[in-house]
Length: 118
Image 1 (tube, rainbow, N blue to C red):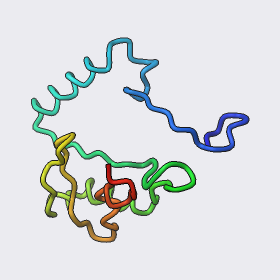
Image 2: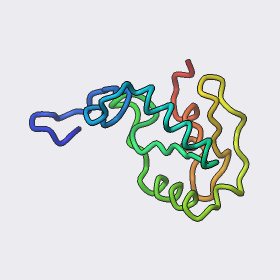
Image 3: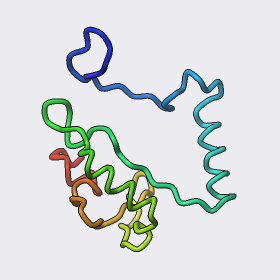
């Protein structure tokens, strides 16, 4: 649950651009700028799920903080560059590490954490 008064259970919400209230342009403008910066500076970008996985409230669970810390540490010290990554997925063309020391496979590959394999 959130910290708002009267909120006792998490409710699913979606925001196309977290912090959107402070961004006056359409989200696609910021996405394009981000893509340009990545290309220009030849940056690697890592998405780390720090939220929820495995199903809706009551089925899934929060991401394990220790796993999150381990992943971030491996990114920051460069160790993540020494592991094998998956082939890009069919929907988003994202790759993920197939193994990381001290991190469960279902944390790395979200499809392993969900029973619903749409």
